[in-house]
Length: 395
Image 1 (cartoon, rainbow, N blue to C red):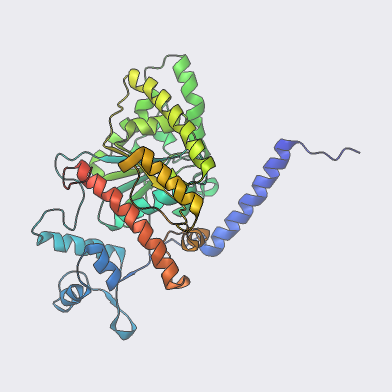
Image 2: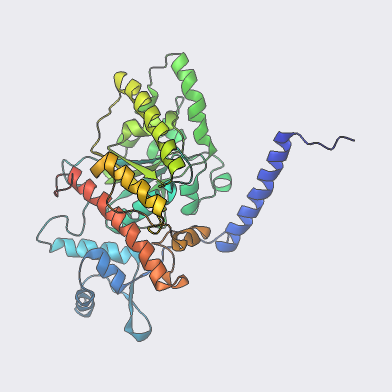
């Protein structure tokens, strides 16, 4: 008797079982009627974010100025994300230098669109994108995150489970499709993170990869590589920075995102196979974007940087690979790297980042070491954004 099963049926059954388990896992972490909320921050954390002394925040509180913190045992003060934003707005009023506490765009500043890309999965692309978007939001920027990866890991980190939450669309595909596109504003969703909105992703995004060859074959007047940029133009006034988490492939979605970009961030795991894969990716990117440029696409950008991820300083071969990259690309490699850390991976198990997770779950040194590396990388990127607006000496 033949007991073989068709592969499509087997894969479908595995997908069904996995989806049910993931839904049960999410229901356990976040009951159906519950909404994810951002944790509160200690006064010390808030002082670091604002660049002031904790004693100064205490004085503001005692003088009845700014938002009132939550007072807990021992007189410890805790601020919500909304409180932090209110503090920024209060402090900005008395700042000697404009933008000290609200560092976003001013008149004449262009919207910054940062595409985060890599051809190979496992490079830390989504983790890097999520921490960058969240840190910039915490630092007072108005941030829009776009999940362009059909696997939707970025969306999952922010509380969305695509096969349950996006049954009737709701991805960027709806705004860039060739027939009856919707306004981008209709698919933007608020997150539980202050200053951070999101356009979530799911498998619908693959439709753009299927539709575009047909549009090209019929000589549709709507050029595929302009569609992401045109959609972003609709909401440009509402944001300072857009962070796009691209799929790990060089398809029409990625090329359209790259055409809309003002900056490109390439994540690199410092292993030989990963760097070899990146080499092929860069060759393909150059060739394809050259064609797009010749067809009228905007290929200008403010900066391109490589960020080393999942870095283990004690690993000799990794150090050699990092030195190899710096010798070739020079200042195009960020000075700081994202360390490989159990704090980052363990936080991901509960669909959180280092900025969300309760640091008491880890040993102090493990958490602080990981967060310092993430903060340093994000600080470099923020400096590049400021430099693109002509506000510091970054290059």
